[in-house]
Length: 255
Length: 322
Image (cartoon, rainbow over all chains, first blue to last red; front, side, top):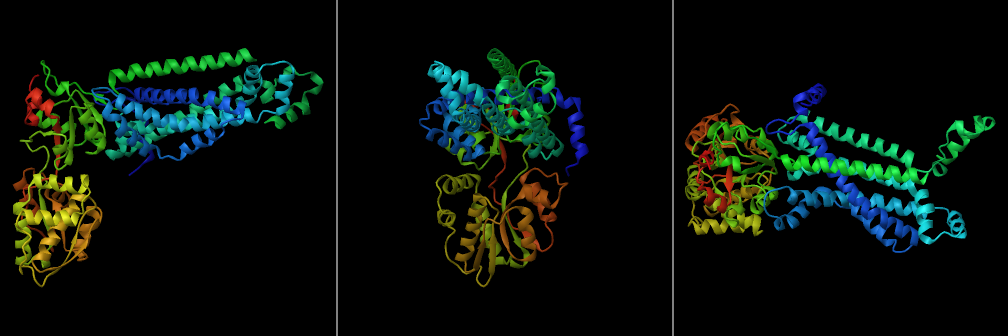
């Protein structure tokens, strides 16, 4: 029976948060979970961001974006086992590498498409007039990319990053499926031993972690995106007579 | 504005790097899903404490899992890695050395293929799981019983392993494999022992059970019975009621789990105890015929190298000091 109070009890038990003999606690697994996710997102950023900027800027090889997008259709757990079966026999001896590498690969495959597609779309959708103006002012192609296109594309890039982060954190639970840690450990162990409070508690923690990270990224977006793009101006900075109606209008228009 | 953006990105990257660093050091000391358990209390290190065990996630808490190994054999492994129930992960990890010992099934084809050593279980931590026919009483005529008992008399665990290799690894047709096994044991001869009986043979939904059902079906057919088959029915919760209402008449079963199904409080462990307890626990209307010596149960297995290195024969050897 799944009772909500059982979940509350599980989450409130300090013994479940600390590491015990034979069972790592929530703190450790939270850190493991973040580690798997952050590594995957950083690798995906390293792939998707430059590639997206390049394709968006040059307008060439756009088929790559659709091809990478198709990767999203692959079933992650099936892929994980497949990669383990392929990679596992080449890694011998103790350690988690044989499990970690397949896990990171599937997470990167999951995180790259939204980052790449959004970066590409962001750069591509920059107003041609802005690009022309920049070129007319004497900017080089690289300067146009980094001073005009990238800042203008940032809102979309961030939304891609946020959707990738959300998906990766939610999916990093499968690390536990191949014997690694992370919050998925509680989900799989709970399911296997019919300890439903543990299972539900683990799932709730994953959801909370995903939301908190999304919130932090939203905060990062707020400060990283130029106000010229986001239209987020301080009311005090504007002249007194233009305060009331105009500011509201401006914000709505650019939202 | 640009400087601010760069600063934020740099900050985020630094944070990420720190997080990744923390995580890595944390996991390298403890190992992700593995959990160190070193409370054996002995002053000298045991063999087990140097080894990593792999098994299904519930093995951590299962009565015959880690707590059972500790209680029955005083064996505490250095580490446990939660993998799968005798599936590709456990087999792969054992083969590639990520784990030293694994909990898999005694009939797994990889035991033969990869030269794994099944550690003996002299204290019966794992309840006996002998293969036997569970049959509707009205169909258990002398002829039918004689035919099925002849199969049980010949069936061994090695046979089960080979049957699994044939149908699971080599993807052969279960019916063909069943006929081959019968003729190799001299059981496929035609006769009239079961003539006039009409039976429906069922099976659970895994390959080994399907082959066993085919063996029963083919042998009965050869003895003149009219046999229908309903294979891959599902779990015990589905087919036991089917046996009771007569939609199937016969199914290959495993003594230990079947006893647990009928009697949740059963404590019998050895083959003979389980069998005699089972005969009493079976509901009226059903009966079990003679059991074979073939068993499909949990076992702790190690690689040949590990067994040679530490001279391992039984689970109890793991508690010796290294």
